[in-house]
Image (cartoon, rainbow, N blue to C red; front, top):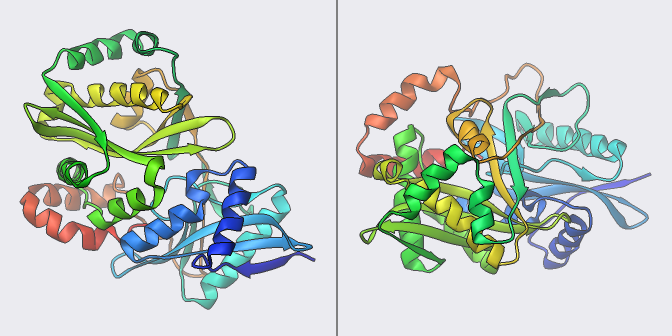
Length: 350
């Protein structure tokens, strides 16, 4: 019989054991205890997880973030603030066993829902493979080859960005962190969504150290586009993942976002990356088509969820029609007010 345990990630030995398991089994960056602990430090949402062992050997792992929000309720998310996660197991049966254990944990701790952003789940859980797609592709072997790998129409936009009066900086010091947060906060405000607390970005950068950085594009000395990227090898080669990025209102006309992603591709290749993980986008959305236009093929993502009996699943999808009016109201808030209020809301989204 397998043994299932609730993992304490503040135990360095246990965290290291799970890190090894994730690496040996091709897990994503969102399966890593390092990610879970960074999220906990940056948002206050509890890092935990369920492990399945046989004869003392780890056989399956379910990373979890216990997300609590006065607005959105309580949920176990795999993984919190990530776009991947779910059960990591060699046998489907082990994965389903951990999902059942997660149900018991949810009921025991007054949690109304479980959300898996990847991995197998029991057949009686709600599942969708149409809401989001991921985009990942190989990096080219030279700067010119990378430019030519971009389809003609998008390549023309990149060339405009290359002719712009820009400076490019890569780093993680206070100046780059402040620049990134200012740009990102303005970007998400323009989209009508609350910004995450800066403590989240600081915690991820501090935890990942050399495996995370910020690339910022400045126009005449002013930051106009910036992205925080993660670097991770899932067994298929080292990949760069531009995770939290955005641009100011001026960035679009300047083609600063196009310049930013192209520069990141060049920077990542010099770091030894062989793949570019453009991340997930809502199917059919503007970012979805932007990534397709760069030559990336969409890969549907399977997400699963469970809700306690008689409880509706929480809805944190900003593209849902029910949020349309709130989004328009949020866009009208002064940026300074949105930045003051937003982190208190966003830390509960998970």
